[in-house]
Amino acid sequence: GNSVTQMEGPVTLSEEAFLTINCTYTATGYPSLFWYVQYPGEGLQLLLKATKADDKGSNKGFEATYRKETTSFHLEKGSVQVSDSAVYFCALGPKTTDSWGKLQFGAGTQVVVTP
Amino acid sequence: DTGVSQNPRHKITKRGQNVTFRCDPISEHNRLYWYRQTLGQGPEFLTYFQNEAQLEKSRLLSDRFSAERPKGSFSTLEIQRTEQGDSAMYLCASSLAYQRGSETQYFGPGTRLLVL
Image 1 (tube, rainbow over the protein chains, first blue to last red):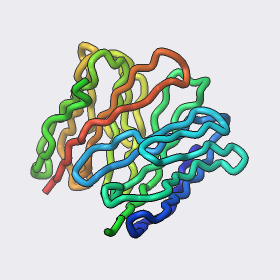
Image 2 (spheres, rainbow over the protein chains, first blue to last red):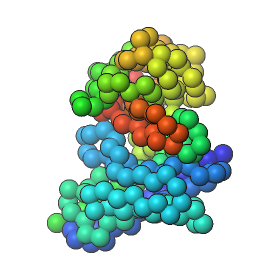
Image 3 (cartoon, one colour):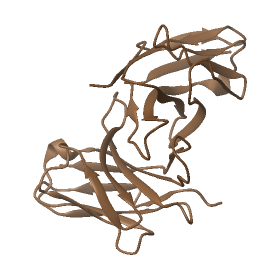
């Protein structure tokens, strides 16, 4: 069945460092891919998404590229801020040919950015 | 756009009691999902509504769980005879899907349940 694997945390970085969170998936066809972020005490927020191979999602300085050949959707940010401290979830969504679909989440990666 | 709201935000109950949670989706969103999130894990799908019809239920949704969306707007999730293993964050999400592959789910803040 479908599955999502993301790197374990916590990931601790200094402000202005480069961030990468690895995410790989197992699925048939072309699922949609998402990154959600959960700030302390808040709900899940959509960070970015991609719906087909080679699509690049981007938002708030974060980017992720849908790589079909490596079944990956790694999240990157060139210069993190303390306010980026949160838990990041990679999620697998429905195929673009499906009319609906549940999201299947990875376990989450906690990111801690220190001043 | 007021976002997805959930009530209550926190619930503490004793084992064996019944609890009910409410979710108000974003206005005009036709799809509504319930997920459960335990500590240190990602959310897991529980059930899904298209308008008022419940179209899919996870195996995680035992007979003690029931969900409704009577008028295709708000939804309730009831847990009967709660067990300590039911302690988790219960998340609601809604979406407006008007074409294949266009769906984006928007999440509420969740209801945190603690069963003593």
